[in-house]
Every structure is written in structure tokens, then in C-alpha cells.
Length: 399
Ligand code: FDA
Image (cartoon, rainbow, N blue to C red; front, side, top):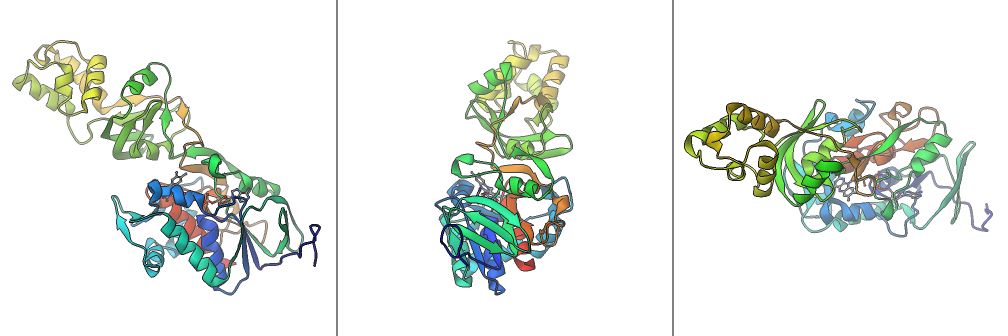
């Protein structure tokens, strides 16, 4: 068969669009079962997101993967794939290739050397299983009769199984696109509105003013939004707030809602300040609060919440109000830094249209959607790669 470019029409058993984490996992899993697999990607380089992940060391999974640590409008969807591909499964792959790794904190597993090691594992598995990879390929049109027909800048592909693994919208400058959403819509599948997640917050007006002055200051906090709370570090930035606690809570935040901060989690601010009144009554606000908070933040909290007089002169009601603010500081972000800075995309192809066992679209036999493109978003800490591995494995096994 010859296509309009004069190139032979390629007819793999499986065509995967997107050579990222999920696509490569699905590719070698299907190829190991004897399927002929082709993966195409529009980028000239493969796995760019893997290479920049985890500060260049790729936090490739987490020991404590639990379904409730994944956000989706279809709460239980991730359970099936996660139960069939565990952190130990990916770890055994890493160890098979003798990649040195370490556990950092909270179950997060990282490469000792470089994220390139993870990409090399995936590419080695693809190569050993006979997967063919084509980079720099533009998809022009997709249609379906008895097979999927994919017209591209490198010719025509005809395949009974099509896997969409093109990820979400985060970091467009390294090639993220809404391609999977467009193809899903073309086939009549619903989309949960994609939004930036694991993303720093920005603030306006006076809040932005005082936060800007504290850029670079970091401290352990408890950040909550609705019923969710994370106890980890907060980092002040020039535009607002970041750090793991705030990135985590951003995945649960919706525009207009407040974020509640406890700046002294696990402590009793009223007792601490009250105690100072008895023992160090001559101290003023910045020095007093500087016993528990970073100095620049202590100065700011003192400026906002206490009189410029020695602690001994502070009325009890001032101490109570200060303590309340330290434990329950409600702040209203004006937004986030958006997809340009978001680590992942919340939302995506609505999982209610997919089989949780195979990732196949219920209404379009042969169409599979995996990884970040679907409405499953993991916590910070290796959860999103684990979703890419688990969903890629589920589809690769089922095809
Ligand atoms: P992924 O984005 O990996 O791959 C999609 C592929 O599709 C890309 O190769 C892209 O070029 C291709 N593509 C896109 N549009 C296309 C089109 N129109 N035509 C053809 N090809 C197209 N997670 C984690 O668990 N631990 C971590 O340490 C980090 N660190 C991290 C750092 C940073 C800076 C970011 C931005 C993200 C992370 N993540 C992370 C998140 C993690 O990288 C992400 O969830 C996975 O890479 C998603 O895997 P996918 O395979 O679904 O998409």
C-alpha cells in the first residue's frame, strides 16, 4: 500500500501518539506480548518532561501510592490500574537496569544520578521489545472505519488500536498540547476542563506587596483548602506563594476560595506568646515572634498584628487575636502561575467514558487514553509518573 506522500502505509497492531512516560510504558508492555508497536511524537527529542522532572533526578514513583492521593471527578477510577501496577513493579525495572536510586522523604523515590537514567530504561525496554519510534511527526488527521487512519507529516498509519498518550497542558514551551482532548472530543468523549495543578499561587494588592518583600523565606506550615490539608514547607515568591505544601493544595483549590495557613502547626501560639509575657516581657513583636518564625516573616507578622510595645504590655485579647492569625491565616489568591509553571494538569479526558481496567474508550473500541491526558491527577512526590506507568501498563496489557 502507498499513501499520498508516496510512502508505504504503515500498519502496526498498535499506534501510540506521544512518546512520554505513559506512551513508552504502554509501548513496550504491548510489544512484549508480541504486538507490533509504533510510537510517534511531534517533538524532535523524546522524553523532555522526564528529563526535567524532579529537579533533573526524576521522582519516578512513591512507596505510599494510594488511590485517594489521586484527584479525579470519578473518584475510584485510578484504583484498578494502580492495584495492578505497584511501585515495586517499577522499582524492579529500575533495579533490573542497575539504576542507582534513593528515597528522599515521604516515600519519594529519586534517581541518584540523573532523570536520563529513567528515560534510558524506557527506551531500552522499547528497543528490546521491537517498538519503532518516530520523532518530529505532525499528526494531520485521524479518522476511523474498521481501523484508525492517522495521516501525518511522515505518511499514513493504519492501526486497529490507537493510544493517546500526549499528556496535559503543563509547560507548553517543551511541547505540551491539548491534542488528546481534541481527538477525544472528535470521537465524542467528554472532557473535564483542564486547569493548572501543582502550581504556585499569585496574589494581588496588599497581599502581593508583603509577600514580595518576603521572597525566598521558607517555613513549615499546614496549608488547607476545604477538607484537604498538607503539612510541608511554604516558600514566599516575588508573585506569591509556592513550596510543597502550597503546590499540593493548589490541586484542590478553585478560584475565589481562600487558602488557610497555620504558621505554627502542632504548637499553641497563645501559650507560647503568653509564656513570653511572663519570662521575657521586655521583648517587642519581631524578636518575640522570631523565636518561632523566620526573622523577616516575624517582622511582617508583628507589623500586621501587634502594637510596637513590649510583650508585657500586650492585652490578652491582642495575644488571642495574634494566636488566631498565626494558626488561621486566611489568604485569597488571585490565581496561579498557570500552565507555564504548573507541574501537571488537573482535569482532562473524562474517565467516566473510559474502562478503568483497560483505559479503552467505552464508545470507541480500539481507542485508549492514558497518562496525564485523562482526568487523574496525583499528589506531588512521584504520584504522577506512577499514574503514567500504571495507566500505560493497563492499556499495554489489554491491547
Ligand atoms: P508526557 O508529557 O510525559 O508525554 C507526552 C508526550 O506527547 C510528549 O513526548 C510530547 O512531546 C508528546 N505530544 C504532545 N502533544 C503532541 C502532539 N500534538 N502530537 C504528537 N506528540 C505530542 N511527576 C512525578 O511523578 N515526579 C516528578 O519528579 C515530576 N517532576 C515534574 C517536573 C516538571 C517541571 C513537570 C512539568 C512535571 C513533573 N512531573 C513529575 C509530572 C510528570 O512529568 C507528568 O505527569 C508525566 O510526564 C505525564 O506523562 P505522560 O506520558 O502522560 O505525558
